[in-house]
Structures are given as C-alpha cells and as structure tokens.
Length: 439
Image (cartoon, rainbow, N blue to C red; front, side):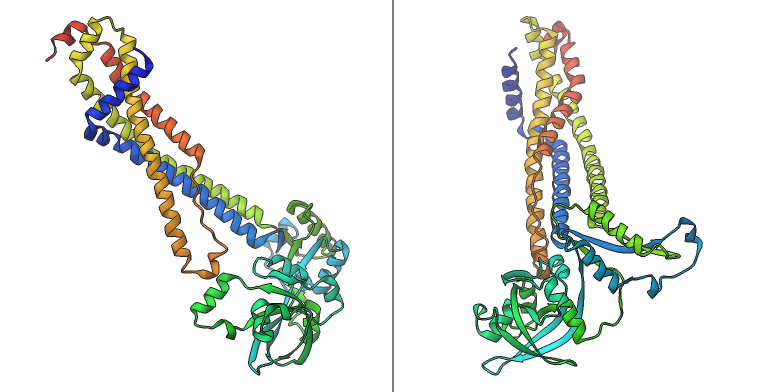
C-alpha cells in the first residue's frame, strides 16, 4: 500500500474514534507540553539572567582577599586595615594603566539645598564619583547632555557637577537651560560651594515610578548629583585611607575580562610581595554566571527528563489502544491478506497509524507548551510591575526554542513507532483464515 494512503487511513481512524484518540494521546500531550514548557522557560530565564547581569555589571572586575600560601589556612588571622588596598595604590594603578582600567570610587559629601528663581527650595544629594563609578553605573545614570566628570576633573579637583534632568527642570524650569551654568549648593556641614554643570543624566523611569508610588511628586524629588571624587574628598575628609573591595572597570573594548584580571592581579601582586598572610584576588561576574548557567542547564535537563517519563506512560497507552484496534479490525486484516497484502504492508500500516497518533498528540502538546510559556511571560511581567525599580532591569521575554519543538515532535514520533512495533507485528502475523472467521 502506498505510504500516503497509509497516512490517509491512519487519519481516518483517528476521526472515526475522536474521543478514544484524544484520551489515548493525553499522555503524549501532557509529556510533550511539559518538556516544551520546561525547556522554554529554562532557556528564557538563562537569557534574561545573562542580559540583566551584563547590563548591570558591564566590563567590571571585583575584589576579594585570600591567603598567600596554602599552609596559612591553618592560621587564625583576620584581615586588618594594613591588608586592605590603599587609596594611593589605586591612584598609582590608574596612572600606570593610563585609563585602560579605571577604579570605581564614590564618596558621600552630604545633603544640599538650592533656591530657584521662584524662591522654591530644591534638594539634592551630593556625592563624589570617579569616572570609573559613572562608567560602571551608566545604566542608572544615562547621559543625555554634556559629559561625565573626567580623570582631569578628578585630578584637578575641579568644581564640575553632573546633575539629573529632574534637577534641571526643578531649578532652571527646563533642561536645556542647565548645561554650562554655575550653581551654588549649600551642603550640610560643608557650606556654600559653587559648581559648573558639565553634564545631565536621565533618571530611570522605574526610579521615577517607584518614587511616585511612595507619594513623592516629581517637583519635590531629592535627586542625586555627582562631583569629581577628589573634589568630594577635598570638601569632606573620607573615613579611611583604604578601599576594602574596590571595583575595576575595563575601558578598552579590545581587552577581555580574563586579560584584565591577569593585568590587575600582576599589578597588585607586586604591591603585596612582602605581605605575610593576605593578598587581593580578582574575579568578574562571568565566572559566577558560568556556574549559574551550568546549574540552570542541569536543572532544566533533569526536569525535562522527569517530564518525559510521562511520555512512556503515554506510549503504553498508545500500544494498548493499538491492540484494541487490531482486535476490532481482525476481519479487515484477514480480507486484506486474502486479497494479497503482504505481512510487511500490514506491519507498516499499523506502525504509521501509531506514529501518526503520537505525532498529532505531540503537535497538540507543543501548542500547549507554547501557550504555557506565553502565560508565564504575562504573569511574570505582571509580577515585575510590583517592583518598578527592577522593571527596566529585568525584561522577561519567553522565546520558544525551535530546536526543542523539532526534537519533541521527533521524539513523540519515535515513541509511536517504538510502542507500535508489538501491535503491528501481531497484526502482520495473523492467520488470514482465522482472521476471516473472527467475529
């Protein structure tokens, strides 16, 4: 019998017994939909996590401290101030690499107030920030006009300032009037200090939404402002002369994080060559991300395998219903054999029917899996709206894996063939005389 004719007969059999076919396919549908849902959510969460961490971290290297020698592990010695990286080391570091790597540094100056032309008080938080800090946090402080404070501003302790677009509207009436103007800020505990506005950054929508939900109107917001780091330390002495866990920012796009870690490690190894117990070590988020991704991959595979077990149950159901079908069609098989049909033709007919049954069930399962993924995306994004400060950072985008769909359909077809072999062989081996006499 022609292959297409076998497919037509299989589909006719499904239509003739709709309810029985649906109930038979139920195990396949549940199994395939579970596998597609799990793999889709797992892969999408990995992509979401990866993009969010990249957005937040960018090209940065972090610090921790470790024993210098393995035998020192038995020594109970805690980190002291002498062990921490000193401020002068960081200055020397930036000079040595000439802007290839920058240090992310920030220092709080205090609360400041100004009065605009209408006599209304405008409140700000003044902080010192290095160029490295601004680069590291560029997502939160997106430059809209002008420039960021530079190394030259920092080394020269210049009175330049970076303000928010909200501040520009509060103080000047409109953002376009702010750039290049001088302002005088009365800083608590410091006094009246004049600054020149060199840049304007936009506060994120999530931050504004968060503050609005707290009941603070836009015109009354206390917004952050940034001045050069050493300008800040000249106005207000820092609490210590060391930075415990500095973050280093990679400014050269041609330099990867591994090369940066090697360079930074070599520099500080030279500074700590006379240290007794501790020395700084460096890492970036890619190492943690690799471990996280590996765990998520393993978890996704394990859950998918567990979900696939239901396919075996579905396969047994298919085999059972095929046995029932053969019993019902014994006389039909006898007639076909009497008319000259070979055993192989009978076998192929029932194998195709079993495979089609599972393939249709697999197709329905894929549709349910895609729907489940869409449902998770909708619910997840609705839940994120409850945390507006993270809404822009985490964008849950569920994408169905095309390879997972193809693999699921192939696997369901294989299940149909595998569990259809025994019933098909039984049908092929029926004696035509006994089959014709079967009532």
